[in-house]
Image: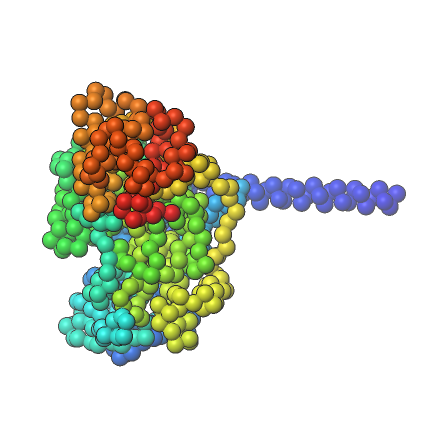
Length: 640
């Protein structure tokens, strides 16, 4: 009888446990999928500048964007004295997010996601600490600014100096490299201050301090032979009158439009907007970030032909965007009944600039690193955001090059060539322009900032330069341990090998992606390695190779298809490929002997040729592998 009662009690307990568990899971599900925004709009906290900066600090962090905040907080928590200085006339922290109004996050998600609950993001650390204090995937910019300031203010080791008129590095000549010894600052009142530091962390958007100190860099897509090309800039604009009812109505729009509690996306008809100045400004589908006062911020406008390093050009962009924004809102109101009653409510004070300088560091992150999901012994952060290359001009459509699972960002990418005692964090770090399309996102940038702050302490303890630190596996292992102890997640997730990486012509694909010849889309399904290649397609491929490697390919690939009808539909033969290459490389070869010339000269390798299935009809993957051979053996560049 007693045994029966015990079984009954156990059954009741298990039932109650199941009900409680189910209730919790149900609550988590409903909360995660709720669109009801109950957050309150905050008044901005006043950021207080230090009245009298010290003459020396352990670390100076230049730039008050999120990456700079993370660097300053990390350094302070490691016991260092820190000066966080702003040189852009700002009154609040957060820069691009809070003054540029970029209030929707490009999420840096882990490949391992829970069935229920919060999104599992890479790196964690200070970024996650801040993210947990804001509203969600998008946020109210006042909340974001206040939380950045609360994090900084909580650290007694940090002095903040806002609205300085100028700042420049104090540089001395060292043995093998220049040495940055601090910053020369003209403060808001006009005083000139020379402030020394053991280390400077450049967290400006454009690596301004590094450039002034003499660090080498490339501009835009210079590494692909197109220095004049850079991604469009954006002026974020605001719409008011977006009540809870209006927000919920977005879910019924269709055409790929969706919402969560704080973010909306889609609105594909926006792309049909007729610009008042098509060569200078256009829009894409909308990214909509919700605020807590029935307003939303719209990231959609593309402004072309702007040099973000030229103040006059920046001014022009803001004027163009300010003129266009109300016209866009008027179009949206007429196009979507859900937006019929919203109002135009202004533009951001600062531009959203995606790309300017890419410094040259001890290591340069490559497209192959991202495509291959490579880990590194000195990885201090991880990325997973799609390689998103926005439009370069009004004729360009932009592209998602690939969608990585998880790749490492080496500490060496933060260590610039030519100048010691300096680290560069954020989008201007040492990334090639293609991987920069993924690594430029702010969550990853904040992780690099956190790593830089901790590295400053370790370098000080060991009396090492950052360059020496970057070459010491023992020291980097210690840095990774410290970052883990302070809350970062530097463990690599488990995920299957992508299908494209199993392809026999994968090495050719790496070369093609590295030269901007191949695009996989957001699901890596568009590479088309087994598709049939065409003669016209290959002429275009070699025309791009000619741009990327102009010193080695000066000929005209289009002569190979001169007089060919429908070249874009004609199968690419091995003979046609060889002739096109010989013309582009300016080799003395006829159509009939071009293939033999490339073989005997070693430009095409026997192992690659042995992998060709049908010489009368090459496939795209085979074409890429042969291009890899030619670039390797003629230009001396190996893409891996």
